Amino acid sequence: MSNACRIGWRVGGVVLALTLAATALAVEAPPVAGNIPADAVYAVFFQKPDQALGNLGLVLDRFKSLNPDLDLKVLGEKVMSAVGENLLSREGMQAIGIDVEAVAALYATEGRSDEQVIIAVPLADPKLFKEKIFPLMEKDRGQPLGKTKMVAGVELYIGNTELMVFSGKW
Image (cartoon, rainbow, N blue to C red; front, side):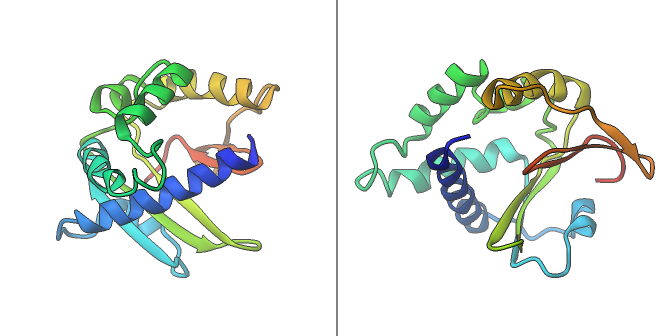
């Protein structure tokens, strides 16, 4: 993945966090909260990720004068051409196995040398998610991904820069 793409994802994560913080609901701590480390710099929880992303467009509109590419419709079209689904929509999320009715989280920890942003997205269909996302990751990297493995009863994929949990209490 190019450096510019990595920076874009980080900026997107920060914008998403700000959007979600602005639209946060007062709710009881969701189960995913138990998996966030105590040293997290921040944590944002949101119900129904598709609705939260809908509000992201309102925030991005404020920054279009700085960067015309910050348009949710344009970003959705770019994602659609790369992935085959608009992951910025409810239908696109469901099409790759994301549970749009569950609570998701975005948080950051102080990693090796900088903040590490972690997105915890609940999956309705982990098998479908793997079938859709793994080929895209392999294409991006130009090499096959490793296999998932079971660790303490939890199915994990541990990559160079990512950890994906496919089963267990998340």
